[in-house]
Length: 522
Image (cartoon, rainbow, N blue to C red):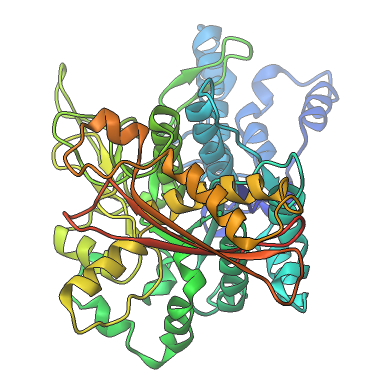
């Protein structure tokens, strides 16, 4: 998992337009206490404007709705005067805390760590699942992959492929979750041209047989800052036919694009803090937020939600076929069955859930996004659940004349099929890596791979679900040829037809890989 943090405390500053009359005359805690103690001993407590000094400490000259109450007005009730002063301090601290946690830079940092936390919690205790974390910014990735002459000379390729997939004893990555929002061109606050970087990432993912999941920035659809207007009545297909999307569509036409998935919209990561009392220092805090101001809520990428489904499916079945759709009466498939939920207070004994996504997509918009190669996450109707109804890669399917050919290509390029095929490619690559040199002919190597694949194959079409879980392939065909450019290594062409079908279609996945003791897959 990669994350863009790199946030320093100096980067997080309250919005000047919301911070009152500035910070002139502000005092530190020690300075405030020292000033209070250093006042003329002949002055009485009633002469000291404690209220004004507290406001000065927080850089404020006044607080709307607040009135100074000199001590002499509460001389008969010291407790009331102290409570009023403490309430003022709580209010001022609360305002500053709200400014910090609603700052966009801080929200990005918190969202990254909370997303990672949910993925780690989902993976905890599940057999065969490991989470590795690489803290690297998008700027660093862009410089690394674009400065390399070839993608396999980048440091990221060394991390993902060479140090694991291509090293004896290494563990190939099943999926890469990249916590970045990408677009087709630079936009305010994002100075990078993402297309060349995405091309290199797709090549690395393809070589490693490790699909990569990213998030779509609203600017990818011509929107600004959020996805609110994506539900408006306009045709997305016409948007992506404009000239500014020529490079984006060229990226989608690349064969390696099958190994890249992009999700949207954003999902809720934290409900607003309710009234909290700190027994240690007595501070009372309540986060001020409203559903109408969604930016005050904490939202994060939907790719982590999809990654959690992959973890669940792999730990339960060792396979990735059922990662989409909403099965009847089952919390499986593409259901995110434990999203973060906030509630409306609709009565003393009844609450109603708020959406767990920052925008609710209609069925029509969901299908349109899916056709364009995006992975939409949707709110389930009248339920506190989220679901992925489709998991396409960004690959743009070719327009075949035959309808069944078009449908087969669409299914074969979906992420669940790519993930399933990649799992077999990992095993074959590692298995052959240790046996290269023991075969004198390519045909012998091919027979060994075919025998191994046959142990996961059953040709019976109406077999029981438990049988299909044990034998996930209906057909497997392997062809191995000598690599004339590298004596002692081979090219392997593998065709896999899974039992688990989508949309009642039979599809095949075609993989090509180089089998060497130290080469790379293609």
